[in-house]
Image (cartoon, rainbow, N blue to C red; front, side, top):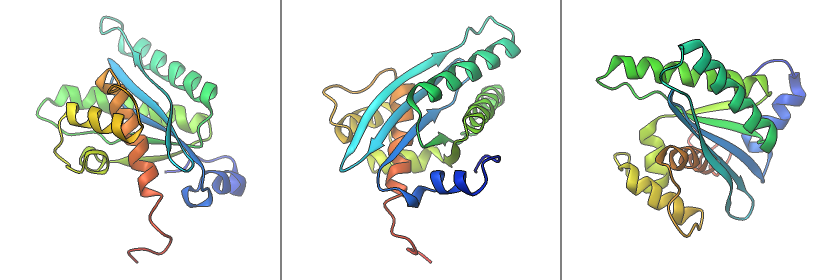
Length: 183
């Protein structure tokens, strides 16, 4: 998905195969806790920043969504990534959780679009497979493998920040596919 309003210049800047050096913001959406992780690719994957944005479950939904949006825009403006990669909504048994995650994901996509970032979405199983080699990996395995891949001394915490870093790594790995492969 690519945001509008920048024409060919935006497409040139944001197209993932136009740059050997890419700076990606990974996002693990959630209404109470949204993880973000910034990873730059040069000769290796370099972690730049990671953290979480929390909203108060006691606040009205419109306040929480506005806070999430404003904080995501601030993080994007501070770090200025090239693109955003977001984990797709996992449909689970709890429909209310899926709805709240969907709302947070929509706000994250809007924040990225507001900042003229192209947005790429990845299924949770693809993210886990890309980072841990197993689409069914648990959170601890993802944290451990993110630490190894980014040469961190300890696994990143909280798990939402580690998941966001994993999404960024997944996107960067997807870029390593040669043009025309699989066609």
